[in-house]
Length: 554
View 1: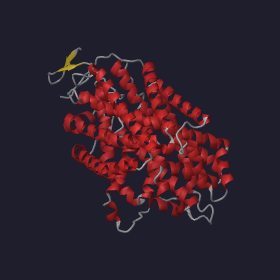
View 2: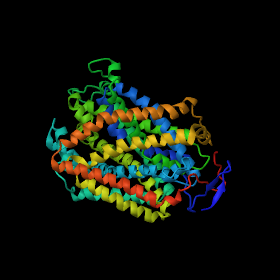
View 3: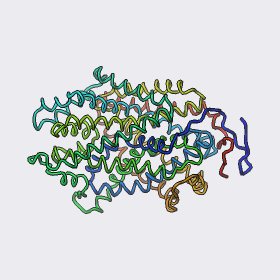
């Protein structure tokens, strides 16, 4: 392997593979792509129900604290790490980590950043196909017929039963062929776009999909805010009461401080920030690696985060729960509905559209918007693994896409087949989307702030910066964010893991075997990623790498 001299006089191995380097074609393109990755189903389904079920306005206090102390700092960490690794010739997490920490073990931590988005994609693309199926059914009018057959007052139950039959929650097995066809179409569409590459595929699609998504949301929001009191007999009353149900602090048995002393509300808020901003997924790390060496990361990262928060708080927070309250009333919005993304999105919202004027049109817009939100996110989940296969094994994109398609197809079939009570989907969501992303976020924060070092990080992030990071945030990145992460994760483990294990223990033997099988599959997937990193280790051995003409920070 060829070597060059760094500015400190140390021999630094040069990146081995002379691959043609991809870059984002514009600043708008990368912001739309990262925002597309972040804006997903969690914004429009998970956040409104979570906030409303946990005190409304009270929930927003830990939510914004988590945004300021975890979301934005770790977002800047991932943007900085990614661009630095990209300037050294690497786009995959193992390569990027090896540039930060010259230790043989560093690249193996990157296995988490490969495995996490792959595992999430395996169930996320299935939910994505639900959204498209519902949009198609609204366009045809068949979903409106469900409410007509149920009659007034029976819509919620009718749509709950329809969804249960649609996904097969009563028993394991594959869904009807029409649903499978749409799943295959969505799966192939994702891989077609990812095959087209970074600029012609991901960036081009997001430049059109994100504005259309926001336009659909604004049309629905305008309709919601102008509803007034659509049906005076309705228990929800007018739009002001509906917005109050979502945003006014609701205190149960004590003051606001007693509510905030509950650790669970902090765990839920921080978890929502992680899932919403896509931090800890390894996606931003990969996306930022395609920036040029002097492209801005500070303002771009903040802009992508603000775009996500606009969609989550200003759009989703004003649409989903308020309109459900308005048409269904508080009696139909207990924690069993608000606490479930599926119940809120696929039971309550169709019941709302059944009672809303022009409900068929707004039902179509709602689920088409969810589909766009889902596909812009699922696309981003494939790119980190593609980058790893291309970089680690010097594979052409066609081969990388084929291999990843085969691996994810196996996982999708597992999720689809083990449909009883959505156990496979729920198991992957719990252990990957919650546990693993906290672990990866901690790894990245420590690598950036403690091993790479705050002094070098400041120099690196300020290259080409259009905005200066406030000085207090360097202290937050080094001390507050890692400590906050550790405390939240330990508290979450103490509360949630025993509860989850007890829940597994209470399942029937058949269901318990399903959960154990899925957990073993996830463990095998992680070990497989570690093995692939080992097999391609020579690409990264030697630590930090340099590309010709690139300054290496001493």
